[in-house]
Image (cartoon, rainbow, N blue to C red):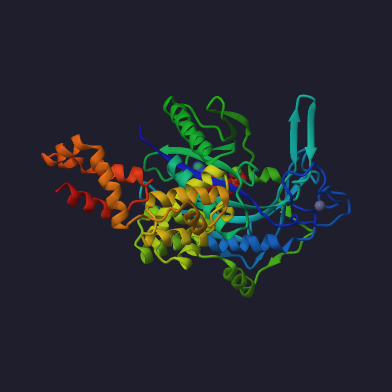
Length: 473
Ligand code: ADP
Ligand code: ZN
Ligand code: MG
């Protein structure tokens, strides 16, 4: 029997606001436990939450970036559950009137575009963190009350590969809007994946399971592949899928049951009486719209249109806003898109991997790269030399000009100088000269290779080639 796979994802993005969602405690990952707490986030009786406006700003920005409708008045709700790292016994969240709804994200899988619907984006606060060790469990409440946006997709994805593409694209958009850094290791982007199977073509959805505890997009993809196969086996052997929450066990590569899945009525949602509704007018929305940068899909298309780049090249350049910014900053100093593209793709990105740095802290600035490429473009240095120079720039932080000057790396196109080099090569290799003159013309590359070797890569190949051909007859 053939099955359709149905996947919907819930993504939590932790916002990079200065302070928490409902108090003025700092948001700072990695500080010592319980140093950023106050009566509000510790749930002292009588304390009252005050909404952080930056949380609303972030929600509007991300909502606009994902084509959502922004709700003019939305409210907060209490989601009740007991957990040791949730002192209030409830989480402030939004329930039936989320601030953003009905959006979409366009993804691309194997060259094909697909639109994935967003059901909603809502504002909520995070819980604290339980740290389990052999001697027991410790609770750190620094994270308690930090602001989150939960982005809920429609069940529109039909393969684990689409889920992976969706997550990558969503992360890119979130990072462009700069509301979160989406650092998976620090847990600032987390994903719950819902998956079900149904007989091919059937309208009605099957029973879903929910996968939790995945710390990378590749793990989400792997877990979904595993879970799709598991469900298929259960269904084909006449069994039923139980709606439940599963944990992905990375070590053993399988899912295991965590708990039966609660329904929303289990949370006893009710309106948060301590916070007034959030009213967002057109002026506020417009203000946020103006703060949005050009988004990755538009920027990619513009690069394709105005520089005639391939879709793949444009994707690489726009994968991160900072890379695209770096590229365009370099163009301001040296307007040769193709050459700059090649050097950013092949050299700058390689250097960043080698040095473990972010492009915004690149050891070679856009201006410095442009200066180097001008030398190359004017044929004052060879491509081989330019690669050595950029490595030197990375290590020493010096400018291309000073390295080229000091080491005398300028390209040698002076015919007299090249001629004397070639004369020496000819007299040192009379056997090969003879073979060449007897018709083995492919030996020309040997002579050019010798010139490049003796000149340490600085000889102008075209000039050298002409001289060699002339001298050998
Ligand atoms: P909950 O918090 O109870 O998991 P949400 O409505 O927040 O509920 O999220 C449900 C997620 O599960 C959405 O992303 C939705 O697209 C997805 N989903 C719902 N039904 C199915 C199904 N039958 N198969 C796969 N995914 C589903
Ligand atoms: Zn606090
Ligand atoms: Mg869920």
